[in-house]
Length: 168
Image (cartoon, rainbow, N blue to C red; front, side):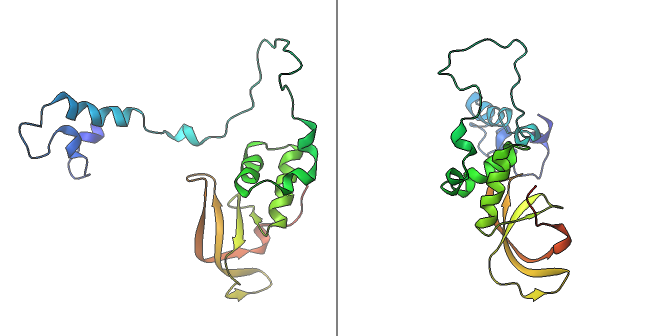
């Protein structure tokens, strides 16, 4: 690929330019780098999966789960789920009662949804500045787009106008 041969990006070793002329042209050296880049994640890998809708539905045995089990409509079940599971349900089951239950449980755990950034924030410590319009301080936020992890954002200004304060 073109990007491997550009100088100065630190990937010259993939072209066999290790400084050792004997190792420069071996197939193992050249193939290893190209194989790695052939399987790199793409931008489409982070898109939400859409629910599968079969074109030709086929009747299956009753033992096969074809719909959400009734137990997942019980709010008490969501109190026992971990934070990662609640985030997964919130982002991947949009528009469902389960999304509502996961949001409700996240709010109980001190998470607050930011409508502008479409992510969840939680105070890491008491805000340094608090006014009627915003609060500013250190927050933990859930990075669902690029890392599926919790990160810390220091000196973040959380404007109350972007706070989702009701569950609908």
